Image (cartoon, rainbow, N blue to C red; front, side):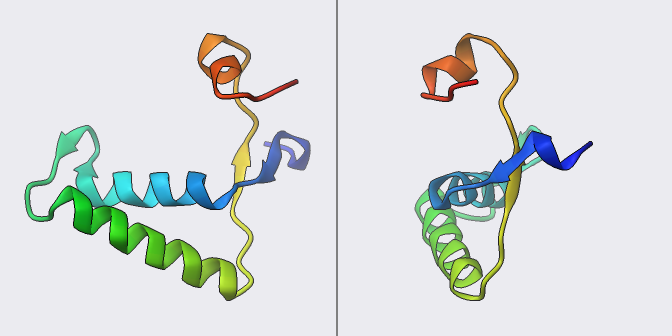
Length: 74
């Protein structure tokens, strides 16, 4: 992977990824936490990481309908 395929992730992307990680183990749903609690924890973690100066990078979306529907441009 080269650096040109990465861009800074915005806070909402980070929150969505963290909340997903808190709710699922692989593709299997984890039932030891509530969806609302996962969202709260993800938002708190994202805020802390951003305040601490962390930069989270993500790959550019693949060309296709899903990426175009989210407002990404190539």
